Length: 171
Image (cartoon, rainbow, N blue to C red):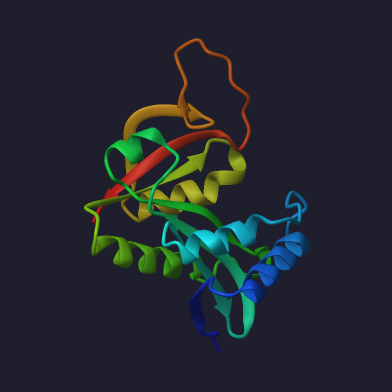
C-alpha cells in the first residue's frame, strides 16, 4: 500500500530543529547550524515558504518558494523561485517532489504569471533536469550563471553547485 504524502509549512522552532537534524543525518554535505532558523524567520515574514514533505509519518524532505529570488532576472520580472528541493534518498521515486511542485505552482498562480527555478549543470542534477523539463519548465534564455551572475563567453568558472541554468514556467 502506498503511503500518503502530506505537506506542512515550516512554522515552529521545533520544525527547524527537526529539519536541521534530518538533513545532517541524510546528507554529508549539510552542516548543522542556523539555516532552518533563518528559513523559519523568513516564513514568518512571508518572504519564503518552506514546505516539509512527509511520507506517512516520516519526514521525507523539503523545498522552498522564494517570493524574491536572489537571481537578478527573476527579481526584475517578479518571478518567484522554487529553491533547494531535497527529498531524502530512501523516499525518492514516490512522487514527493511532484506533490511539492504542484502545491507551489498552485500557490504562485494566485499572485504571479510565471514561476522559476535554477538547476545545476553536472550529473548529480540529471534527475532534476529531466523532472523540470517534463513539468513544462523551459530555459529563461539568459544563459548560465555562477553565483547568480551571468557567465560571459570565455570566462572560466568552477563546475559546482553555483553553476546554474534558470528555467521558467508560465502559470
